[in-house]
Image 1: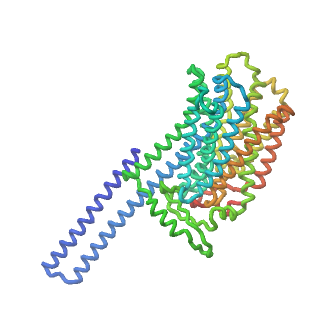
Image 2: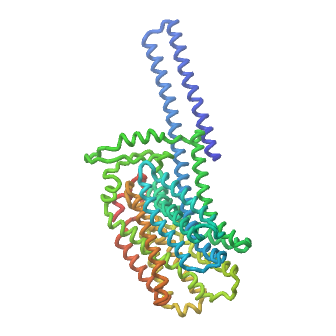
Image 3: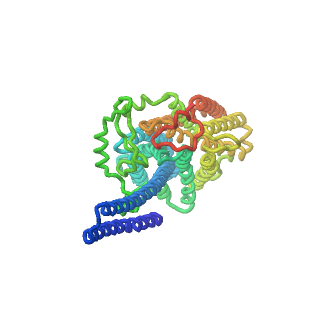
Length: 566
């Protein structure tokens, strides 16, 4: 804020002398004409005075134009950074709100004296259903020209904020029409819609800011996704001290759920500050939305060079219609659905983004069911029967496994797009590394399951490493790839479809893994996970074709250039 105030003062100081200088030039010209009249200067001298005056005024105009350009560049810089912060906060909010229920449900079961797995499954399933709907719907909204990426993101984040507060204040008195789990099921569905919408919108918004290079866009998307790890880690970090310090368990679970609204409030404050910056002139104001709408209507039937009719999608930095950071008019040649049908290599791209995401989430979310099984196999059944101590142990176990997995996000951010050991770490290459490591780890755990029970540290370490390589590899790259490979007209929509395929995989894994473990045993299920990892690796090898990001600049509305697609 201090830097922006200094910028505003500097601009004022520059513009005021310019205006004063113009007045002085005009005064001198009038005085010269008066002297000409008194002294009888010839016409050619009069022309000389006028020419000099025009040149001087033109020079001052160029200085003022240069000042305005500097203001515009500085405004775009701040706008781009603000958009990155918004995308990162949104992704943090989503991950926190999605994961916190895993520690809330055991607490709630103690509070309500229930142990029904059906109720817990209902709450979890409603979230997944809401997320799938939100990912498709939110992605489509992001491609709607009048709303744009940022407008759609505001909408889904507001829904997420309201749903997180609603979840925290459900009625547990028993007097409500619905019981506590039915109320949570409804609120978690709405939360899922908001959280699901963030996936495509945050990725696309962070990738499209400014005339950045391919490598910079890649870094911004990876940085945005890394906030998922921060959100996952925050849940047990908050839950553990609450369980040790707050005596009332009913208060504990409400605090955990209610804190999920804080990122939404932070985003509202950030947007308010951005609006105030415009009103106070600290940054250049956004264009008039009414003028933009009128221009969009006038341009709704543009003819391109091939004679095809297209519509105009504004990606300018307008707070009422934000879909980018610069005023670029993008021609949609075939309409929204038509742009999807005419997307180059659509099937191949969807197999690489949606197919790989589906298989990965089968592993990632299905495997979370085995956390208590692996921990029990490693450390045995807790001897205590104290409910609070059991909850504390559950939260500590979650913190332990999350801490092992968390560095995967950081390493992905550090290496992706860079050369290490002579190899460029493209998203495709990183994804293949992740699936290969997961295959080896699952196979090792499955084959040596009985023996590993006698070495608890080794068992838990191997299991934790499956999540580490998941976060380093496919968990990051499945989020990154759709925002880079699709064209702007349908980028957000196809990103949302890919993410929804992932959540379908999560539902598949969560539904099939538990019965499979009961029927065939845990070791067999781990070997099945290894097989799924190999299939996902083959899918990545065949259909993910993005090469190394180059250092050249690209327009924020373009997909990766043709020479980068094999």
